[in-house]
Length: 321
Image 1 (cartoon, rainbow, N blue to C red):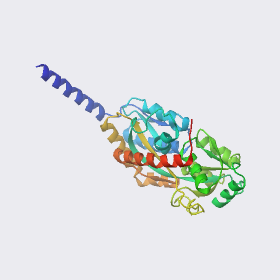
Image 2: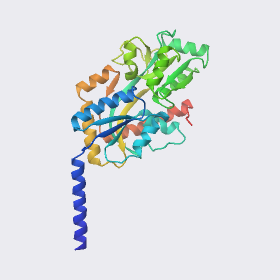
Image 3: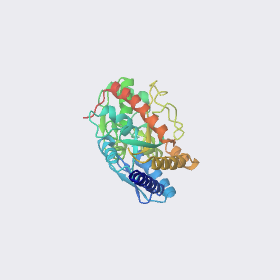
């Protein structure tokens, strides 16, 4: 009798759990962006949030929690309830680079999260103020060799892919440039546009409107091939630095322990949205390639990226206290 009662209770609890998951979501979802508003992470998060809201029928609120190279917002999500109502738009920085860059991390990029879906892969663009007297990669290398550490490059924060794109450039070109970190692209770009900082290796979506508006000039892209959004802009490799390649990626994560039914529902919903022609066209216009994959595929990608960027961080000597 006692054993039957326990089995009945377990079955009832399991049914209740399945019913709760089937009703997901029944309240607003929070999408945390670990960088300031206006940058690429924020732009992509808002695009995904809009599609999720339309498909799931619940409000998806974007919440910017920036600082420490994305660690503050990411840690907030890592410690949130694993119920599918707090998500993170993570990046190559928060989930592949920071683990090698920071001696002490507040979260484990693998153990504390479950990957939902890789949203987009993005090239960075080497940009400068229209008034800065360089027109090519070779010009920048020459300027940096002529006056070591005088040339400055901005980034959205220590350890971001934008920062390491500059460090990789320094390493392969054999030059010294001074890194000027900001709390996000949106705070760095005004100083680049005004000429206070010389150059920046920023994510394409953040700079595309400024390039088209003539407020920035595009020198080269960091990807291995030219961007369809900037077909006349060469890659850094073809413009004089063979072997150079660096790109960023962005994807949605949930706290570890989030029920598989919810993970699968979110993964399928996001992947379906990202893979539509309309969404891909919107991303392509901003210099981003839409991906949209399964949780398992994204997890494998994160593992590979951690290994890849560990080598880049080690070679660059970059560290953040």
